[in-house]
Image 1 (cartoon, rainbow over the protein chains, first blue to last red):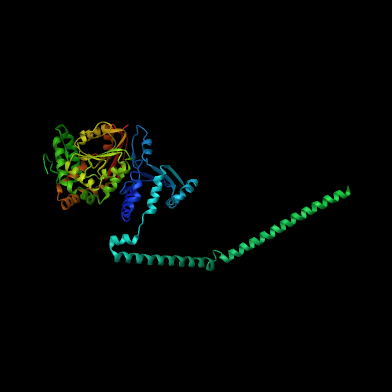
Image 2: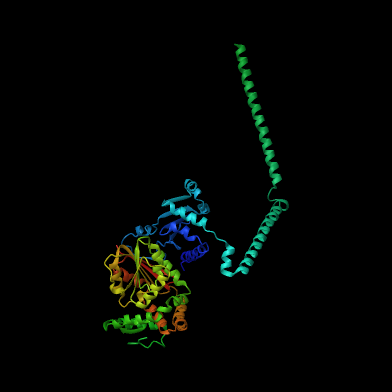
Length: 234
Length: 276
């Protein structure tokens, strides 16, 4: 089973379903119509190509080489494979920078940091960013359309309760774990102990600096006294 | 369903039947006969018999594809498109394209500058495909051509990509079809043949045999009220050349850089070849 195609199919279905929930989606898609954008994610070297029409987005994961068996190649097909990704705009970026891509103001910064490389028409990337930022998705509304008012509000209420509970558990677990490590097991120093240690280090450095300065002063004085003695003998 | 000259295969095991059918195909070549599933028929009759099958299943074709493959045929077709290297401005021939699954996606990829030609020998399938694509709002860059893959009515060097998904096994003279495709491909163009093939594992093959010879015809009866057509489907798959044989046939037709990828344990294989 080609997993990449399964996932891209699911992503395509989800993306197009979600687009339908914003009545203005065609406004955002219009500038992208007939355009294509390839995104290569590093370091996994995975390329995804988005083809836009005025109505929808098609997602493709190019398959460049057979993965099971290759027979005699009378000619080198590497050029044909490399040619497979020919888009209006090709972004190559680090996965870690993916979330920052939504803000078009970050593009220059990412390029300078070598986290992003853009080949082709930059406007395609900007229009995609505008689409992602502009689409207004209200989860309650989506569920209401799909399930009806009561189930939607019940689900959202339960979801919020679960979120609150998980947040409480997370915070409580952090406190409990911290106390266990610091107070009971003594594996980690407490913040107060670390602060005291830092203060002591600062004091020690201060006194060391003072001693060093005093030694330097004494050395200078000694040198001066030696110089004066030599002068009086002459 | 027409009968013609038939071997009685009802009591034989699937594997034995395939061997017998292939053997009798070899003998039959001298008498200008060919296989139609496990049956032997006059070569000039196969085309009309296949046409009958597809006339019969056209209306329920998409539903049956989803039921039979549990929707996996969509993933196989997506893999084919992803392997095609299609892009804006390309001219694509979707041969034996049936109800236009590949055509729909190619149409959006190649855009207004490109074109997709949906071709099928069967007018019923073509009509279903035309209706479906129009309902999807895809009209601008799609042409519909009723054509025999063995004698394509297109000028030489016309297409950047030719795809044939689940169609080649129904062609009477496969070598003629491959030669015809080679002729209409542009230099640098590629052929993609998605077709049922031979499972790579013996265990999977046994399960697959049980499914296709016993369950599949019953599903055909239940969903499409057509048991015979789906029995033909299972038989025609077994009579189709295996992965290596088909690849050799493509090389004989002139294709270079040929390769294949087994999908779902070899139940289906995608063959690729280039024209230089």
